[in-house]
Length: 315
Image (cartoon, rainbow, N blue to C red; front, side):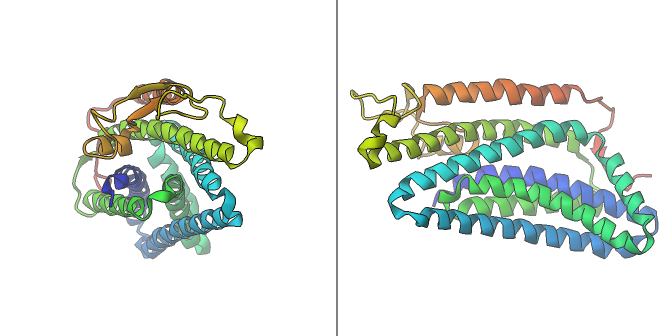
């Protein structure tokens, strides 16, 4: 088993899970302050239902993917990498949006949650449902992004799911440390480190997505004479070639193979490939310059404070 494939999903669910844990902790703290702890059960129910819905979405994605692959067995070798490519693009879009937009909104998160909880408490009989909805949306939003990433790597089996569960467990532990035990953690620094890792992980997903599309087009080109011209690039003088990704940039299979340690770790986390093609290299660099650049600029817009540790029960 290749347990290195669990690392990216672990990082993603850890980052997303801590964000959801912050929302839950803020809500619990506000309810305690407002002497409305009777609504805590609605908070826990929102967390449980949110996790269940995220898991259900994952199961449905798996069923849809398997069903599409079986519609026409002749084209299974085309459909599977094609679907992986499509889900990779969706995951890239969602995770990039989360990195940039959510980083900008993070500084206002407590105020936004406070406003939502205050509004919910003014609804009298519907206060519980208001709190439940707030938590449910927060958990499902984070869970959906993780499910998309796992769907983009569905051929890797259950290992990415194990990584996701591990990240969720560690995130829950951090939540308990913050809000039950009053431990102070530099949460701003935590999100910055997680953000840098996610930029590199998603950049690696760009490389993988392009390879999936290359495999799909190559298999389609081999399926009949009518489609063989789809491969506009084909090198006849080497065993290592691409269909639509252009010439190879490097071949480091003899130095740092991507199916052995430590190359397999670099591959899972940062998109390293022992065979990298020109289109992949360009896509990787463009992503780092655009999304990575926007992310670092969003960090620069934050107003630094002398004490950025988190303990929401401080008076």
